[in-house]
Amino acid sequence: MSILINSSIVIASVIGMEIFAWAIHKYVMHGPGWGWHESHHTETEGHFEKNDLYAVVFSFIAAGCFIAGSMGVSWLWYVGLGLTLYGILYAVMHDGLVHRRLPFPRKARGKYMKRLVQAHRLHHAAHTKDGCVSFGFIWAEDVRKLKAKLKANMAKTGQPLQSDQAE
Image (tube, rainbow, N blue to C red; front, side):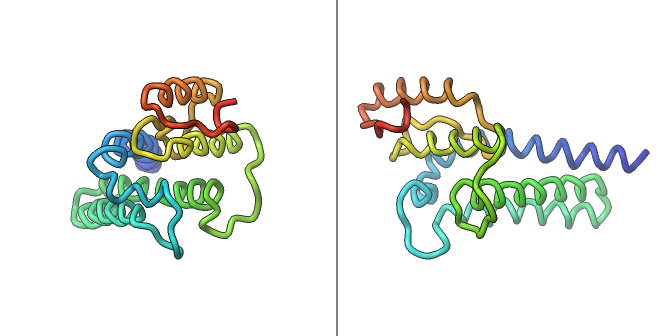
């Protein structure tokens, strides 16, 4: 029975992290935390960007969960595992598949992966912290809805829209 409970904690932590990451991305990274995140929306030199500091912060949270879980609050160890699995999914899908910052063996295949890549490209169509759409990392809304939102957002902010982004 504990395997089922612990597995449920891990899965719930991965799902919860996507919800948390969506909110942090939208309200912190595209808000007061833009100073770090802006590097992700502009061309940078080298392998790392200031935005990677968010992953460092989140890794400390996961490490804290592992430590607390090892010291007696055992369910937190499984939360830490879920956060770590989310981080791996993020690295593979976002940094590997979408941005090609990691050596990824192939391009997106399948409806889900293609939608994820397309949604993130729409996110990057806005070059400032305002007007962006699609703030999730491993889940993305329907691309047609995102295109409509992006057009509306760009009209509100007065930003130019690249012709291929919302067509």
